[in-house]
Amino acid sequence: MDKTQIFTVLAVDDNLLNLKLIEKSLEKEGYRVLSAIDGPKARQLAAEEIPDLILLDIQMPGENGFEVIKHLKDNSETSTIPIIFLTGVIEVDSKLKGFKLGAVDYITKPFHPLEVLARVRIHLKLSIATNSLIRDQAQKLKQVTEAQTSMLPTPEDFPDAYFGVYYEAMQEAGGDFYDILKISDNITGYFLADSSGHDIETSYMTASVKALLAQNCTPIYSPAESMKMINDVLVEILPEGKYLTACYIHINRSTKKMVLINAGHPPVVHIPFEGETYLIESQGDILGMFKDAQFGRQDLDISKKDKFIVFSDGLVESAEKKTTWATGTQTLLPEFKKMRDIPYKEIPAELIKQIFPENTIMGDDIAVLCIEI
Amino acid sequence: MNFEEIASNLGLDEEDLNELLELFTTTSFADIEKINFGLKENDAEKVSQAAHSIKGASGNLGFQKIASLSKDVEMTAKEGNIKGLKEKTNIIVEELKKIENAMKTD
Image (cartoon, rainbow over all chains, first blue to last red; front, side):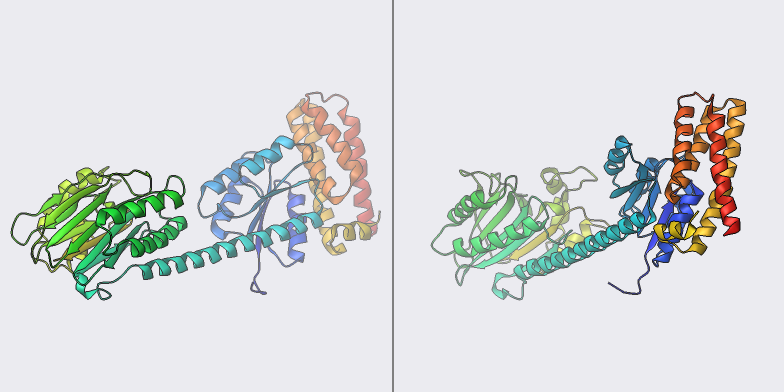
């Protein structure tokens, strides 16, 4: 804490003597004091000066203290300023109401200036501690973001996997996740998932899923077996209500076979080198929720230069237009078709450019992978 | 009246206290006028509000007698019964004058 920092306290009381008494006592201890004799003036000063603390009398003619608290809490700029209210000794209801509205403490009247000082001091300390805690947590979240980003492989990490990617997390810990698995020289696994939630819990889940993929996506298991085992472990370890939608693509470039496992995830786009672009629709249970989950499965013969686009629902869903991926993907088919002649590494970013005009505020995490055979 | 003691009790110096006392007596006499006006006009609300103001200020400065008298006036007036409050108001005035006189001689 900066030693030269001067704290500002806003005192609100219709009684001039009390106001002066508070002012004198606090100024003596080095505080900067702003005074207001009624509610509207108090709100105006609070919004203009953003004091570090507010001392507020409840019983005032016109707008009373409760109304002032309500207004201050409704305004995002003033909502976090701690408020200590002044109230009569016997008024229990008033104390409860003050706390309910979000005040941090009260002082009974008649008050003693030294008590006012003591309470101001302790609540400023609390407020400083809380703010620094919030800063610490933001810092930790930033580390999580970095950790999570480092879990996402780049095309440079896997040159043989022939993929391009676009990834954007809305919050520090994104809910979207993808991974590339080198199963053998000719076989690569591509996994893309979208978890319910975007919080810290989700980021731990991301780490678990990555570990599970590494353990279970090996040459000895078929893609369906890999997903089943991952599902069974996730059912055990995920907190209630948490689950993933996921898509796992298993490509063998020597036999030209592809297996697609779909767990409640949006369809995958197939752009054949020769043939019409279409959606590979396959229904299936979500991942991590049911012990006996049945996933959608598609087996495909593939050719060199075929392209596949896998994406999370953030690409096609719009809360604004109330579209879900079921309808959203269909309407985007023309956009997918336009991607045919674009190099696979550029397709994810190009799609985003096409679908989201500049300055669009995205409502969800977005992950898009484009794979070329 | 020991102003030094009052000041140290409040954590203030005497200069600050003098300023506060001046403000206190001025506003309190103004409130007394409002009480008297309310009593004359049979306006119990006005009496109660003005007494509330004196109560708050005197209580915080530690003038217990004035605080307790003005509380009586406030509560009685709140019940709409303002008869017989004149006497109590006069005692408050006397107490305020005591403070004022002590300030002059101090």
